[in-house]
Amino acid sequence: MYEMILVPTDGSDQAAAALDHAVELARTADATVHLLYVADTNRDSVTTLGGQVVDALEAEGEQILETATDRVGGVRIVDSVETGDPVETILDYADSVDADVVVMGTHGRRGLDRYLLGSTTERVVRHSQRPVLTISGAESD
Image 1 (cartoon, rainbow, N blue to C red):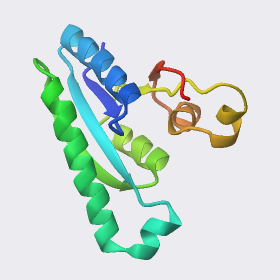
Image 2 (cartoon, rainbow, N blue to C red):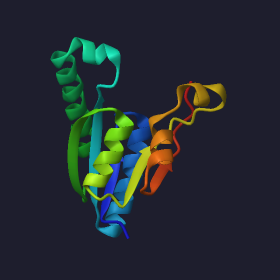
Image 3 (cartoon, rainbow, N blue to C red):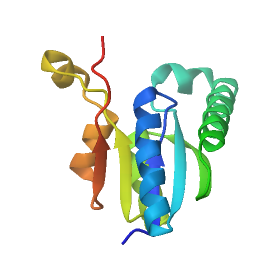
Image 4 (cartoon, rainbow, N blue to C red):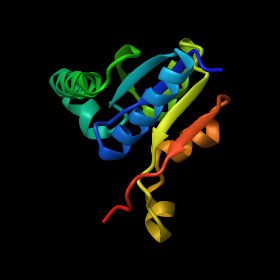
């Protein structure tokens, strides 16, 4: 059923819950899990400051991926740090690895926060041509 499972991560508890679920799917299906961290260079403050900030974001991503990989055992893991707009980068990466499913955590926002802030997960769900499995996270403060 699944051969390639994409799990975008930002190091949050919700992303960890999504990874745990994806690992169980991968064990069952003998699939490969692609862990993706996107260094968000879409913000004005990042692009204005240039290379050093991007390098710091990429280093943070490497650390987050290392921590996530250390938690996982018994499945094939491929990890990658990419830069760009998170939604576009996730969708492009899913296409490039021919992901069968994208597994993402949600922040459990309710009410006005959900509509004002939006979320990467919500936008990936809306724009993806691939199945997206969302794993509910704890409600944010």
